Image (tube, rainbow, N blue to C red; front, side):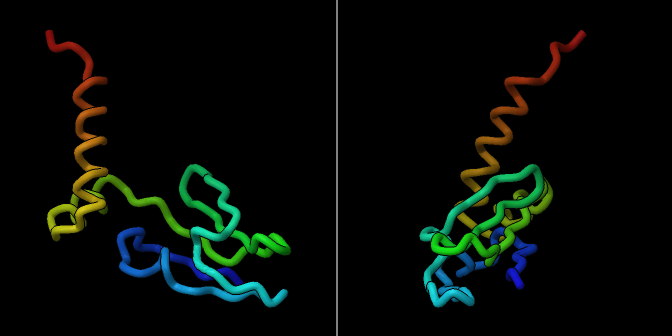
Length: 92
């Protein structure tokens, strides 16, 4: 059964070693990644068994994490806020 990460900004999920029933062991950067709208799936690179599901953060979660000092969240928030400014409809 796949591990599920609900808090994207939870420390350590990227570097935690996971094991597969086929015997493979490694961390998320070594896995096959599939991006979906609300989550990213990580599968064993040997047998494609799903090992990790990571929920994408909401804007509120990004803001909360940035406010708590998470550097990755600060960077993401700056990108999102700039995109929102650029796509804001003209006033008047």
